[in-house]
Length: 148
Image (cartoon, rainbow, N blue to C red; front, side, top):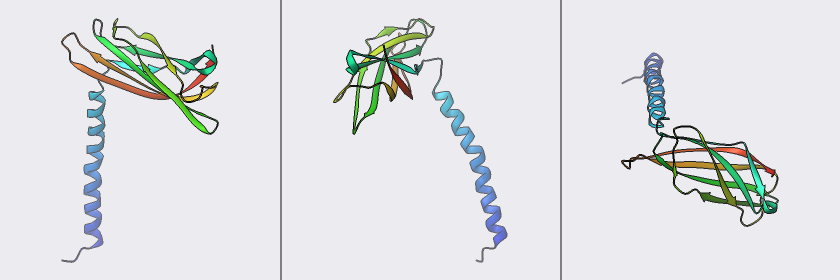
């Protein structure tokens, strides 16, 4: 069977048409699975250095339904000279108010102190309903460590 250029062109258009509809549909499903009704987390742009860089305090802005519970997690990584330093910490379980809550999470540095300047933070919340249905939300962003 001989394949002509016109048959290849028709096949390419058909594959492109299928992908054009499948990719947006997949993205829509992904957005629905990140349902903002169960919880969101954002990291504040600035973090506060403490104890000469032994720690930095990262602020999480958390929203979740009133009466639900959440635990927040933060990790911070920063290039300091020729090494990478970092750390992580979590909050205790906190009751959601239904409004955005600012939660400060201290993160200790290892093997070297954090410095003033750019770092990278990852944040996550684990939210559960009174009936123990669990949901997760996460985010990451560049932050700026500043002197407190």
